[in-house]
Image (tube, rainbow, N blue to C red; front, side, top):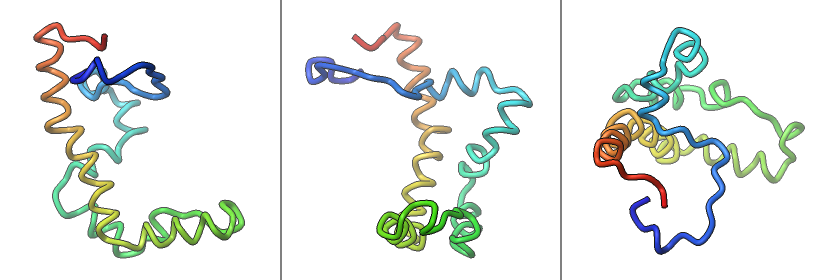
Length: 111
């Protein structure tokens, strides 16, 4: 939305603005998407996930194939990767939500 001249095509596969999702939040949503709120917390998500990444993430070589599972396993055992994943959720609840509100207030839409 910030650089419409740079975009020639757009396909949105699962993109509800975070502000919209939070405004519609009810018990059903909170139960299904509880991880959004957990991941928004400071330090706790990383501590829980990094304590036992295999138990947290699951998956197996049989399900994913040996090569894909090796890449996946290396990623989920890297605390920097976990922090990056969690920071994306924190941004959603904080700055992304704020930007959605500002865009709505200003009447900005994807062109």
